[in-house]
Amino acid sequence: MTAHPSWAPCIADAYANKYGEVAEDFLSLVVIPSLAALEQKGVEIAKQEDQALAAFHLHDHRHLITKTSMALCLGIQSLWEQQLRDYLCYCGVKVKHKGSTVDLIQSAKWGVTGKMPSLNQLFHEIRGLPIEEFESYSRLDKLHVLGNVCRHGEGDSAAKLRAMYPELWPMVGTDSEPFGMAVAPQRPVKGMLVSAELLRDFVNSVVLFWLDMRIACTEGLMWDAPAMSKEVAKLQAQRGALL
Image 1 (cartoon, one colour):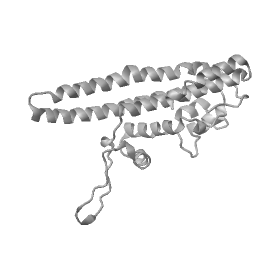
Image 2 (cartoon, one colour):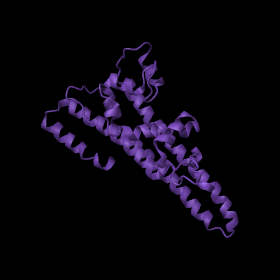
Image 3 (cartoon, rainbow, N blue to C red):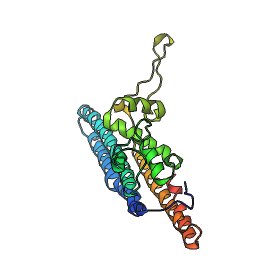
Image 4 (cartoon, rainbow, N blue to C red):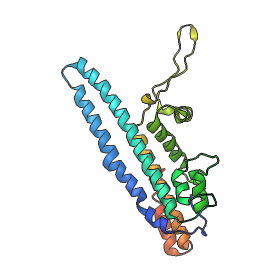
């Protein structure tokens, strides 16, 4: 995703330069160590002499890992969403809607269309870039849906999640009852697999979004200058590891 050369950078782009690094720090300093500590604890529980008791402890511990993974997912989603809202607020652009622009940005819903403008719509109006055209968008959209489920549990978002991302329940198949009667697979929220790899991918999508914004900003500063072209090429080279 790159911008047209006429796209004008603003002070918000300077504030956003470190957003990707903040997300990476959250992954490396919070997410990965937390899950690694829980996995190690599980190994210790499994080595207990009383295997019957260990089985009960492991059941509870796996439940803790699931809840922790969901909380960490929600943390990533909340961090990213606040970054996006702050960015739009820092742009200082007044949109053509009733009410305070800042209030609209802070209350807008992701991807939701209706009487009130969505966060996607406001991003497009304020920066002139359709957020849906960013290569990271599909993964960020998945992050938002999953984050809502991690926050609220069962509901409309959970139904949407089950329909769009059944791979989050890898152990679920279609069982059959006697006489060949198919049983619909059950996908409870508590049975989701929110792996460390998935959380890492979400963080990579956040980093990729801000990297692409930085590329657009650099192109917009002086797109035909040799120094800017060299900087854009340098930034473009970082994208591969995030895709």
